[in-house]
Image (cartoon, rainbow, N blue to C red; front, side, top):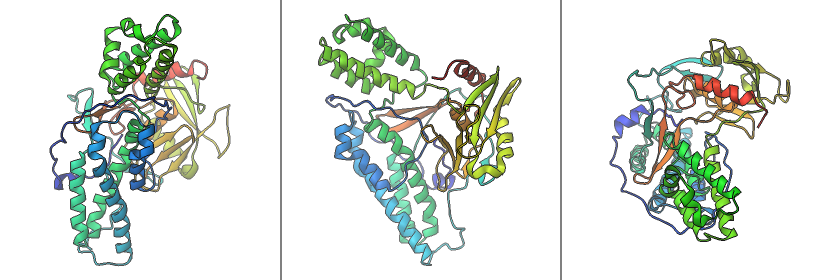
Length: 435
């Protein structure tokens, strides 16, 4: 989840009003379907280059139905990225050269310190677990600061730098850097890959129903786009028409409503829906096996955490254990396999960021400061579970909103728990052949 602590800034910088409403339309063009791996990984390198890549001419050509938000905010995003790149380097150079800092009594700033820090495992510091209000709703909605709010932080940081308060400016620059890097994957998925951002917990079943009915149409030679809509249930038809990306795909498909070309376009449309659903669909992995009912083993390579394997095992067991249920962590040396299992390797990030699991690289990456449940959450990914929070794009505020369940570990790593649903899903995944 996108959690980055900067409490002092939100005292300094009050919330601004929301941006003006965005909407708009675009003429459908032939989409290029891409599979996208679920990951929390933050992009590295120059922020300017990252955001130029999102908005470049090539990205536009390969992209998919831009919103008015993209045109209205493109200059703002790029200016913030350039400011952070330039001034992060300038501040570091000024401090390393011994330039006068008007607040030298302040400690040298690194990443803003999380509150409630309670323990450590090797180089990893772990925050105290957050308590859940028993009266809190099952689902909560949160959003990032608006682009206007980030512009205000840019102004505040620029003032500090002008006053030669370099130390004071560092938390601002770090926070802005994190915000832009955390938003970039969503920007890339939406603008370049065309991923849907209308799918969430309330309508997932309707999306799946639309996909199933489309597959049924593909299998029926007498079903063509011209009569496809009449076959749909009301919820599936509403999803197709009310979801921005899908409505454009539907228009594009209907340009060839009765021909074989139309059926080809329907197959492409179907792949887009499948890709959106797959983003949340669990799967088994080659690092895990079922030992018996309720008991599973996961193979790991400890990497830089080799001296704290027992601490990792004990810590993970705090959530991943229960009555007649266990998750056994088995560590092997680099490059080894055991019982036909291929391990995931731990990696400790040197920069600020968030934990993530890469299935392609078979690794579990952890920042040096994590939420209480971050390691447990990433173990869930190694087991094949997907994130249970949902990101949607609000075209009125031009922001991504996150829906999460505070009680669910795969939805909220600061307060969530391993639920019966998680264990039951593992039984399903690992009692059947590998997928």
